[in-house]
Length: 161
Picture (cartoon, rainbow, N blue to C red):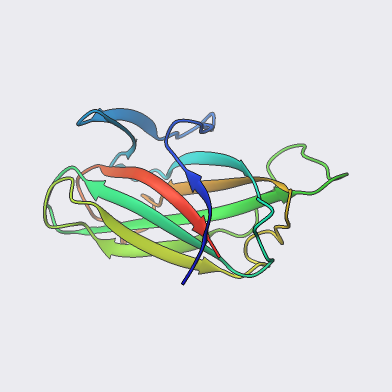
């Protein structure tokens, strides 16, 4: 069974200058909201890799829901950035973006669904214990397979090993 390394919540996030996701108060919960445009909307989760990390694959678990039951497909993607002691943190130095999921929206409005993507350590920017890290998550609206007309709500993201 996978062990949780870090829970990434909608509160402490960074928004890029262009095409950011936005906050929404959804039934007394703060969620991240990604619109149904043809632009990739983005949010960045900062974290420090905890001591419990053993250096293996990183499993990204995204807890999400939808604003409508349109039944079409969301495409989600993400990428890691990691800086060790003595590393240079100037600019964005994210590793190669990986598609997390191309998945049909839940059939009930606001029903929570979970998708996972396993990143090898190399795909996760060679993260090590104590690294200052960021995980950049996006709804890949520019992907022709993302044809869901409604909003994507992200309740949280967990990183597991």
